[in-house]
Image (cartoon, rainbow over the protein chains, first blue to last red):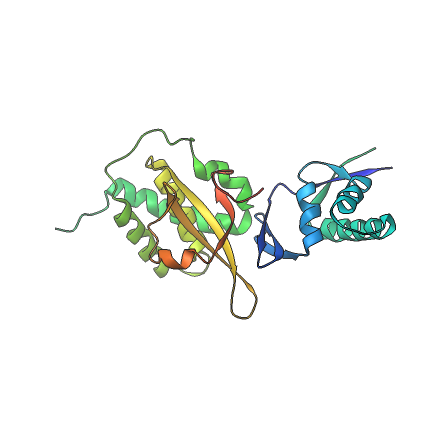
Length: 91
Length: 144
């Protein structure tokens, strides 16, 4: 089963003093993001699977695929729990 | 002679204050943006209402209101956004963020018309805010 994720429609993003910031218009909560977190949430404006997010990280940073995979997986889990991303479809 | 807000507009403003602030507490802001924004662009201009006067009326009412209706920048901006759009004004609602001295995030909501802050007491401080969201959706730089 492959999950595809996308950013919650109520989320708005910006950069602030070198950090990413996400505002959830639904619950009006703010979330601070790392640079890579902001990169991933930007990519999630359309449905993405884990592998696609890993590709995004590999294109942006000099990291191994294994590390990119762990980072992306951890980030998606945290974002899903916080309601920042939703599962768009499963195949 | 001090201009008064027409009765119809006072009633409309009172109803907006009664409904919008508690609605913001229970319904996602993003879900009511379409209703708040009204027709885009606004249909026709109502010249019976003076915007400054309306703003002062809303400010006073919110400052006297209890708990869930008490004045905040978001409640004020949202109520005025709704009312002014109904009056045919092409206003936008902006939400911006900045860091405070302790490194925390501070947000502010304000109105903009023709690219300039509108009915806002202190324009200068808005320069320190980074825009994160705007209504109507997609009207300005806040990324979705």
